[in-house]
Image (cartoon, rainbow, N blue to C red; front, top):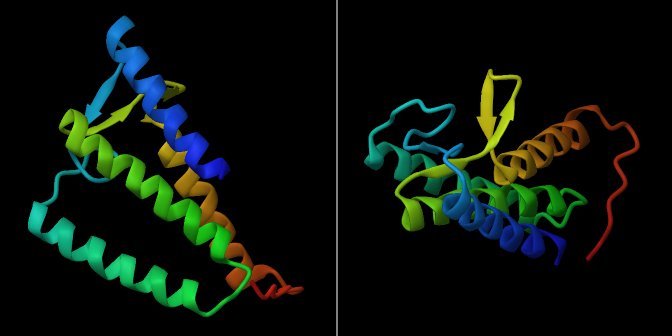
Length: 127
C-alpha cells in the first residue's frame, strides 16, 4: 500500500514541478543517461522481470524488496510514456540527479542482495 502511495506522490511531484519549475531533467537513457537500443532494453527488461518473478514465487522474505524494485521500475516506465523519458528531480551534490523511483529501487536492490548473501539469520516468512 505504501508503495502505491509513493507511486502517486512521485507523479504528483513531477506534475507540480513541470508546472512550476524548470529544474527537471528528462533522462532518455537507461541508467545515468546512458543510451541503449530500445529493443535491447525491452529484452533485458523481460529477462529481469522473469528473474524477479522466479524469486518472488519462492515465497521468501524477499518479496517486499522485489515489490520495491518492480514498483520503482513501473514508476520510471510510466514516465517514459507520459513525458518521453524518466523525470529526475533530486540533485545529489551536483553529481547525480535521481527521482523517488530510483531511491525505492536502490533500497530494494540493496536489501535483496543483503538478505540473499549477507544476512545470516535469514528469517523466512510464509505468506
